[in-house]
Length: 460
Picture (tube, rainbow, N blue to C red):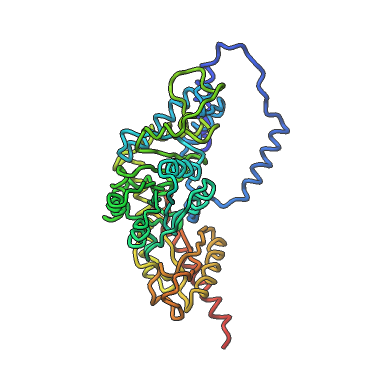
């Protein structure tokens, strides 16, 4: 597989080089024996990683880039374009415009303003910056399960930030939100379609109803979950939230998560193209070769890797964003894998599960025990034991109210601040569905081993 990748890349590189063959020859630094030795050291150092690309890595949001994205990125790096201005990346800037338009079309936004960014954090920064400009003196509100970047960015921008409690399914509590909106202090509500902890989807369709009454902006943080708008196997309420995206004011999505791209590749989209007026600035040295729009004129970020745009564009050509297509089927496979794992966990005597199945492809659970503290200890032990058997999961500290009150004998039911350490799995690789039996066998064996050891060490 790797040999074929490099062979294809080598052929494309020769084709690219032929386009500049008319220029006088110039010396290019060669990689000598010393460089080869260093690269061997690099390879050795890089082995000190979890096997992120393997299906048995089922922990954090780490999805390997598609081979065509790797190849296109490497090919573009021989030019090393900078998509801040057309002077630094003419072809890659055009490809970025097309790639961003494909993302906007996926969300039914024929009119839009947007660009790629180094990731979701900077993309969200631009969205909240624009929100502050359009709703001066008003606060930003987001769920307590929203990404921490929103409170951090609000602080950086000097904007007030308000946390909205979540319900027992990890979604924004609408009653609490409406109480906040009644104060007229909220200018923008961040709606998360796929929280990074548990993959919960805020009810955007219902929040839009509140918008008509209270007049606030809606920013959708779909950095993780945005691509699931293409999935055909979502629950009715989850589907309703995604179908409401065309009515939001701004949106962030990360192609370097489910979009099969290398880090970092995020995207900010505004539904109203006139938002571009907020970016107005002068540059005496970068915008001189063309009167066409430079991406740097609609971005707070300056230098940006044009190679990211090239890689995304190439991937979109191979795997277009169509309902029922190969790309959408990969998302559906991840969701099915999550649902199937959830059912196995529900039937197991070793684990406690939340009362509702996963909305996207993230599953979380905690070991059965008398108290949340004991469950937390077992979670760490099972995490370690699974890793010994090459199954790599993740840990998350989550509210106990995500679980039914009857799960623990000793628990303050009304203690909303109580937390428990959970095991967590992001089944975002299409291959995870085929590997689910292997994953479950290792997880079940780890639970049995930890339970056996714990029982044998208890005092008589």
